[in-house]
Image (cartoon, rainbow, N blue to C red):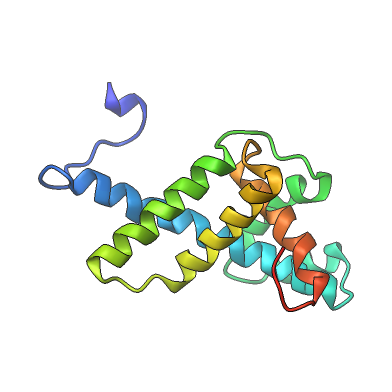
Length: 146
């Protein structure tokens, strides 16, 4: 049954699967935050999105930028995974890290973006909608996040 969902892996004793899920989920948050902030920075510096995407195509996040570009350009983020659930998962990752003594500053920053976007009403939208939220909030330059 599980092989229909992916490749089953034996991770370890009870609890190890939950820990592995937190590790895997932690990698989802950072690229969205970095991409959103890069686009926000580009916009605040006066670069058109086309130029920003051309530049990003030469970076380590090229695949993420290309994959997310249609949604960012259209502002339409088809719901596959609620932002509220991503925010919850990011909170679980940071709580587990705090409990275990791991330093996850980047995940904490991404968790804050998700929490802010959820607070501002995006909770029922797809988690990738945080991209537009970040890119739109970053040019504010008031020293605060949205």
